[in-house]
Amino acid sequence: MRRTAGPARGTEPRSPVRADESAEDRFRREFGRPPAGAWAAPGRINLIGEHTDYNDGFVLPMALPQRITVTAAPRDDDTLRLVSRQADARAELAIGDLEPGGVTGWAAYPAGVVWALRQRGHRVRGLDLLVDGDVPLGAGLSSSAALECATALALADLYDVSLAGVELAELARYAENEFAGMPCGVMDQAAAVLCRAGHALLLDTRSMATTQVPFDPAAEGLALLVIDTRAPHRLVDGAYAARRRGCERAAAVLGVAALRDIGNEDLDTALAVLSEPELRARVRHVVTENERVERFVELLRAGRLGEAGPVLTASHVSLRDDYEVTCPELDAAVEAALAAGALGARMTGGGFGGCVIALVPEERVERCAAEVRQAFDRSGFAGPAAFAATPSDGARRVW
Ligand code: GLA
Image (tube, rainbow, N blue to C red; front, top):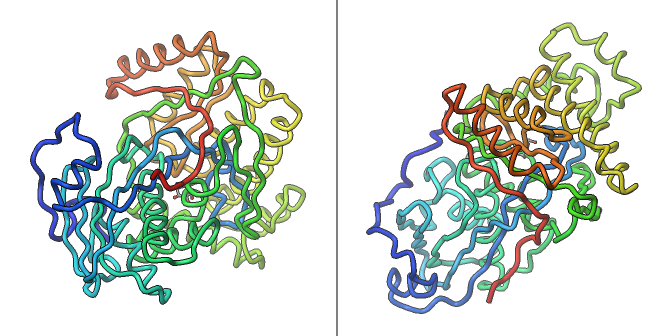
């Protein structure tokens, strides 16, 4: 198994961050020359459609206002000099030495993108890169996909590689799968690149067809509260990969290319074919979750977001009982949010820790956050963080 944490090879701790120093000044201090530009990509939450992307199914993420920004300049050799303001660390790597699994920690993401571009035959060379941002790390809000996509955008611009939109997202996903060793689907990278302010992104992960669905909870007196449980989430370790393998095995037994091909109307027949109770439960989640995405989108389009709460909560229950990817902190946050008047709540992202989203009437947002904090306190969990999220824009050049 690949390691998930620990410094990148060649990573050294840095001197303490000067909080008021601009990214440009920090770049000059680190690399002794000016940057050529800055590129940013956002974190995301997934509104609904969880663990469906590697089953060729549907997802509905939105971009957060929090983003990862990379400030960069090209080099005329094959050296990568990477500094992370967030991780307070530095790595120096030779592009020729890059190999899957050879770099761990945050540096694997920008290095993986360089590696992936080279694999695909693009002539990118060295880079000085400063990473900065406010997407909470390790919270399941896709800071790694944001870092990959911001880096890919920077490299495409700096080395004149024609790469954008879905192709750029696919390349970033390839880097994460093959170089960082996380067998994720394409949702996070697609969200980081393709999301638009004021919209949720309906993505068919089989055809990669996208639809921007207007999403404005405030127009209906609602808010989307993100609760970061601060329970550490670790996706590279076995559980995520095991879920994925289980789905592939079930699809093979059922004689379909992917579980996406099982509709709600075929579910009972499919369940009768599968003998393992665990596989039956996994399939039930995926099939019903695809259906819930459709239902949620219908309600959104009809201006009936206020009725969509139970769809969110049903997704959580399915992820808890059938897919078994929640944890005590996620379940407690959902329960406390619902008790405090949320219309619906669910874990978002891969699970095993990370964040919950709750659809809450605006006037109850404070109370909801406070009650989740109290519930965590009573259970002896670390204090959660909470913020209201507005759908924001995908990756772009900053200057
Ligand atoms: C993680 C992965 C995504 C997706 C979600 C679950 O965030 O990176 O590809 O599978 O889990 O929906």
